[in-house]
Length: 381
Image (cartoon, rainbow, N blue to C red):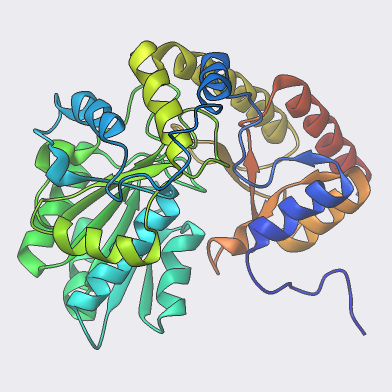
């Protein structure tokens, strides 16, 4: 007999987010921003969409003007050229494309490492290809034991490491010292790094260190406009790599992605050009997320949740109060009783059965409603 507590197949992020989309409620589950995109961007899209000349295939490498904006934006950090950048269909295609390319360079055994709790793409891509995935845990104080990491890399013959800063689901930053040490290890043990920086601009105090100044043939940098401009449905992302990789990567992209929608690229380029790369908008969004984070964080602590230090990103990664021992059941019951959707920690780690993830990138009224529902559920359960 089936039960509402039966574990569904596939992503729990999709499972819980779809509940809200189909049945209503408060979506603190999927990393969907609850903010409108910049009004200027929507106005530009409305104006240009009637042009008859922009509705066909865009150049495979990306709109040339948008590439120029990206090059100008990153020049202070790295002498980037068109030979280093490829515009793709969101960060997910970027990561998948890079994975396919790197795996092809290492036929046979391919071993991947990610830092636990792990964003779902990092461990599910290896699973799709029947590759080995290793979860590496932070220490009790959430630091990295570099000696232990080096030992695992050496013994397990790691080919690829995923890093994200700020992290998802745990909004931790990799320190500059950690980044440089892992880059040093990549040269010593001949592995690659995919550095996912989609939440780069969502920080609470200090901006995270991103090792673009050390870009070499071992490092790939991934980002997108989804979170920067609150347009997750547009699927416009990009990555930066050493130019030696780009001919082969672009050839693969021609067959599995081809190009990104022309109209959306043109709209984004025009907006970035006219609005200092979205500087004012992202400051407003950062301030709103910080406020929402503070509100929910304070409430969760009052209710008995345990929360590690979080420096940025969209999420609160939290251990349940002592009276709960199953994050999946907690999430199911919270939605069924109060129509508030969150994500069980087991989506990101087999060791996180007592954890849940909350999305705080929502408007204040929705955060308040979510807080009310969580408070009511915890009080009455």
